[in-house]
Amino acid sequence: MPEIINLSSKIKKQLPAELVNFMRVAGEMAYSQGQSLYLVGGVVRDLLLGQTNLDLDLVLEGDAINLAQQLIQIHQGKITTHPRFGTAKLQWDKWSVDLATARSETYVKPGALPRVKPGTINSDLFRRDFTINTMAIELNPSHYGELIDLYGGRDDLEHKLVRILHEKSFIDDATRIWRGLRYEQRLDFQLEPTTLELLKRNIPMLDTISGDRIRHELELILKEEYPEKILRRAEELEVLPKLHPALKGNGWLAEKFEQARQLSSPDLPPVGLYLALLAYPLTNEENEQLISRLRLPRSLARTLRDTNSLKTNLESLADPELSPSSIYRLLHGYSLPAIIANSLAGDSSIARRHMQLFLAKLRYVKPVLTGDDLKRMGVATGPNIKEILNLLQEARLDKKITSKQGEEGLVNSWLARKR
Ligand code: CTP
Image 1 (spheres, rainbow, N blue to C red):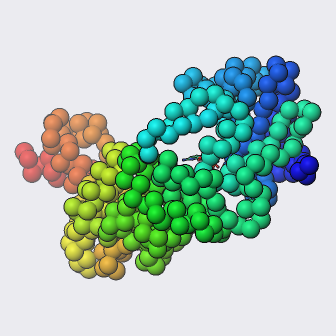
Image 2: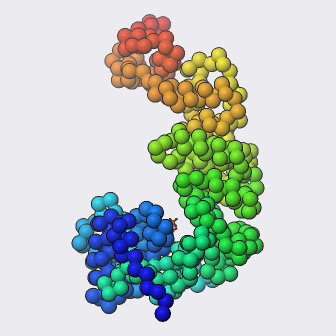
Image 3: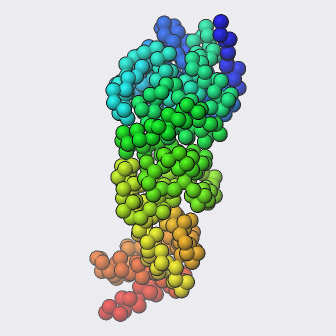
């Protein structure tokens, strides 16, 4: 008889009481309807590692949407359902829980999304990526807290190993190549030798993955605490060139990512800034290739294009004699992450200083007078308004005027000149 491991005291210790109560109630409700409910995936892994993870994933051998609808009545929250997949997301107060109907998957074609059908908890665990993610905890009252570990996940956690379940895993879904590197580096684990062999052999399968799915994986990487570690490992294993052959996961990138973190602290840097730094060494043409490989949405594509275009124009910002208004004029059309990326990654220290000045001060400088004020002072509606507002802003930037009276004086002399 395998040893029964009960994690109920760990659950109680590590998860907030509200979520623990939620799981108890959900387990009882499922049980009373003759169904079985389980806590699965990353949260189980992290419970065993003693790490905080509040993303509850529950799997039901039964109709998950139906159970979710009953549960949301207790919690008065929001429910989002996906009938095609038999999944539901519950959100109430500050909590969010995913409920899924246990399912099995078959991969008809490498890289495409799998065909799914209802299944048991065993088949649901078997469809997953790595052993450390295949553990589940029973939530039914009679077995509450009992660990289900069909594939040696706990052993692999102990030995700090990332191991796939079967040798076709990376062929079925090559995004697991990126996921494997992400877990390996996040947890400071190692890819188990056969897994590493298969990963290397199946790198060409990354070409079967759509831009949207690859972008999603890259975004997950850029949301990690130290994305540069994953990118360095990806370069070492020749996974990174599959994103684009000109990308580098080197020491330079690590230094820039660290600077981005210091700048963004206490938050993590936004994905767009990391991405702009990653793409920084690319030429314009390579940049376009990356944008289309990742099918970047408009705002991220703009960040990369702006970063590249500003990079090629940095010389004009490297003149030490530039006035604040000239710095403003050279920079204000670029998106913010592009300016920040260049202020971290640009070669010229003068240009960097000018960008820092823009970011910290110049971009906030505005005249006090508004378009309506100008009309009241006698300026005719039309392009004149914009012209004078620009004049006022320039004078403010260069500290030629520093008060409302100063602005009014400038408007009056403009009007006098026009008369
Ligand atoms: N999964 C998978 N193959 C994928 C994506 C996900 O097998 N390509 C499985 C994994 O077992 C994972 C679960 O689906 O545990 C949920 O996916 P996700 O939310 O991405 O992972 P978590 O483990 O919840 O999150 P984390 O990144 O913290 O591990």
